[in-house]
Length: 100
Image (tube, rainbow, N blue to C red; front, side, top):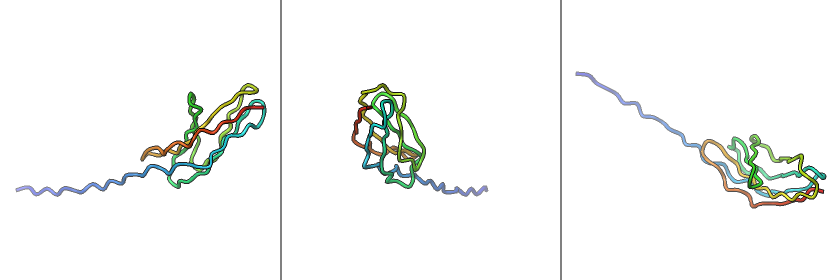
């Protein structure tokens, strides 16, 4: 007679991070726009910043992104969300700025 013991597997599921807030987009020059936000999460792996056609990633605890090499008088709108292995947060609303 063979006895088998089954080990119970303990699985921890990571919660998706809280969404960032207070996002703002500001023109810094004729070629740069800065995007800033408040980090409301303590478990993010990073943030995604998008203008709707291109998405950039920045690391955890980052609260700013600068888009450079833009043409003068270019209007761009950005939104931000946090992510980790548990999922992605909601996006912030789009915030727009026009280079000088």
